[in-house]
Amino acid sequence: MNATIEKFGWPATLVREFDHWLVLLRPAQPTLGSLVLAAKSDANAFGELPGAAHAELKAVTGAIEAALTCFTGYAKLNYLMLMMVDPHVHFHVIPRYEETREWSGVGFPDAGWPAVPQLGEAVNLEPAQRDTLVAELKALF
Image 1 (spheres, helix red, strand yellow):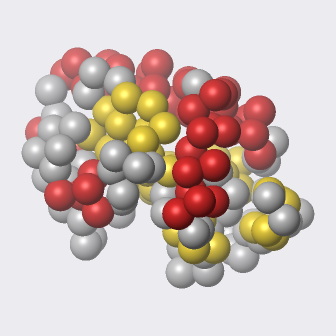
Image 2 (spheres, rainbow, N blue to C red; image 1 turned 90 degrees about the vertical axis):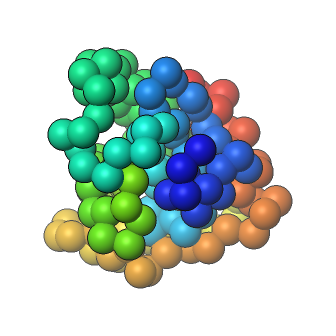
Image 3 (tube, one colour; image 1 turned 180 degrees about the vertical axis):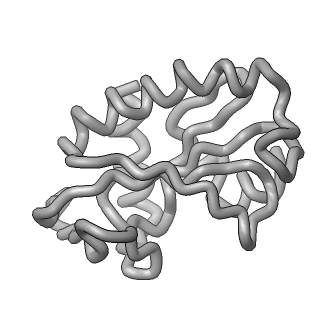
């Protein structure tokens, strides 16, 4: 796997694997259920991905949206392709909502609602919390 995937905690954060993409739990959760959608490729530009990776995005985003609808009941879903620090193709997938979501006794406010997500205002999960959240999300895929 590429360095970007490893930085986001793979394999411990793996929620679902597709042919060209991995869905990972984002270790720092700006909102509950935040994910990273990472290309398995070493490409550093979206346009460098093979056509099959682009085509597979329909199935991948459909699976993500169905799972997160069940899990958080989000109002909006943001796919952010930032790639400023981590060079390989990936999106931050941020469920957006007005009211704080509770999970396992922890509150997850959406600090940026209704504007830009505040990625720096995140809940950092302990390893046991991460593993439990990964398992719950895997069950929805």
